[in-house]
Length: 172
Image (spheres, rainbow, N blue to C red):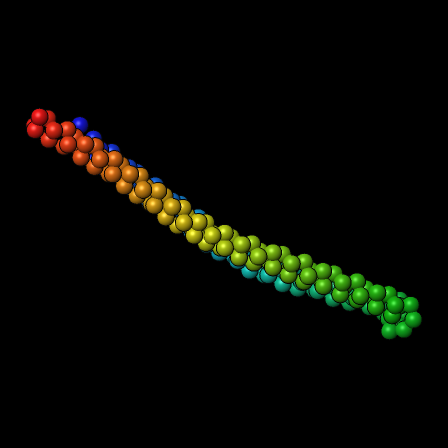
C-alpha cells in the first residue's frame, strides 16, 4: 500500500501530460486546416479571376460580332448607320454591351474578393484555434501539477503520521 500514492501521482501526471499533448495536437490540426482552407480559397479566387477574364473576352467578342452584323444589315438595306435612328440603335447596343461587360467585371471582382476574405478568415480562425489550444494545454498542465502536488502533500502527511504512530508504539 505504500506505493499506492506514488502510483496515483504517476498516473495523474501521465494523464495530464497526455491531455496537454492532445490539446496541442488538436490546435496544430486546426491551424493546418485553416492554412489548407486559406490556400484553397486563394486558388478559387485565382480561378474566379481567370473565369471573369474569359467571360469578359467572350462577351466582348459576341458584342463586336453583333455590332458588325447590325452595321452590315444597315449597309445592305442602304442605310447609313452613322446618322439618325440607325445611329441611336447602334449607340443603344453599345451602351447595353458596356453595361453587360461592366457587370461581368464587377461580379467577378466581388466573387474574387469574397474568396480572398474567406481565405483570410480561414487562416485567422486556424491561428486562433491553435493559440486557444496552447492556453488550454497550459491550464491543464497547471491543474495537473496542482493535483499531483496535492496528492504528494497528502501522501507526505500520511507517511509522517504513520511514522509518528510507529515511534510512539516503540517508545510506549
